[in-house]
Length: 273
Length: 339
Image (cartoon, rainbow over all chains, first blue to last red):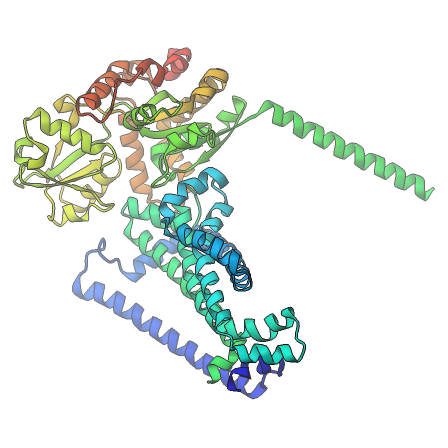
């Protein structure tokens, strides 16, 4: 019977006490995170000065920040552009993945027909695929989003399918006996049960979509974190390279944190167990 | 009364909208849309094209030009042959040969770098004094054309390439600066700048391919065969505006670097100014000194072609007249082409 908990809880109202306790815990967590970052910054700066590390191996954090402050708009524009590509690719890939997961779960023939094609598609390295994307979509934002989509939809499809497959048949039979329609069965039992598994894929997809966006920018573009990375790398402008790396890290961690926070809100029973 | 006013207003609005559409259509008729695909991201290597856009030189010739940057794994030849881009500043004579060898319908309409833009660099106080000394040493190079030049230089001096440890060169020149490798490949305008900024002055020895009778013109302007055949005036107009932009860039290098850095603000200004100086030297070397920018030196092309045939990089001789069409650049008055 315990397996019914998610479905029941989704219908129940969210316990208020738990929410406030959780947000207090989060503030503490945030403070700890900041403390950790400050510590890492001090170690970085200190190590470079103390051991006299040459700036082309590791520049001082101050020098990296200096590179950002020299042309802050360029970094802001690049960050926003890559964020947009990542988000579009992620949303498209995740939606398509969940829908395909449901379709494959429902229609066995389709699964046997199309899933192998999906698998084959994933064995093509993105690098080989990128030049084609430029031919088809040009140097547009869409071209990068397509690469992000290409990297994200597959893990979401597979995990959705896996999650839906883990539904207890007895629970489904019980709901059926109460006259639940296919639709009700999907939204009240199957999807909630699959949700933890889907979020495993979404967290994975959040990083993959960023990789896709950055790699996509390597096929000819003028703005974006990937472009800044490439440009700095090939002119060996080391502070600018680290600045682009930090921008990518900030984007990646930020996005991952958002997905994880949404997961905590939606899959609350998982945190409580 | 009210309805009449509304009617009048609607009529006026319709008229205004109509005339706006009319003028826009006229503008579109005058300007031909075209794009230029670069071989790399915006930098001073392409300053003249950016200056020509900024100063409206293409517009004055009736071209609405978009500059599309390149990147790793992007071949300008492919994008121009498929019609994705109108013009391309592609890899060089090597990539034009390779494309023609594969049957891609592209034509070279101008050559930017008249001489080999890269050199092989070693330490002055190191063990390598001559090409003979390459034997048993570690040499890194790019396997995108520079490797053929290296092999050619070795062959000229009677060194077999399997006697040298030739490795693909990664992005960074740091392994050379750290002394992990003996000889590194460097373009005059990028890697050599980085090496010189990290090593003491006069500590380097350069091996220049021209000293061994090999020249390797690079950075070629290309169009598709169809564009060359059906729109010769567009090609000439593009060359006219581009050369005007380049002349301005050389006359005012600081202003040109400003224009480039507007497109790519995170670039290092000192490096870009140095780069533009080196690009000027490469673009005005050889025959270009007398004939002007983007001149196609048929003899140099023939030498490179024969060199590639000899080392079996090319499977069969190419029709060089068809691959390199100098009719467009020759059509421009000589005074306009020269600096």
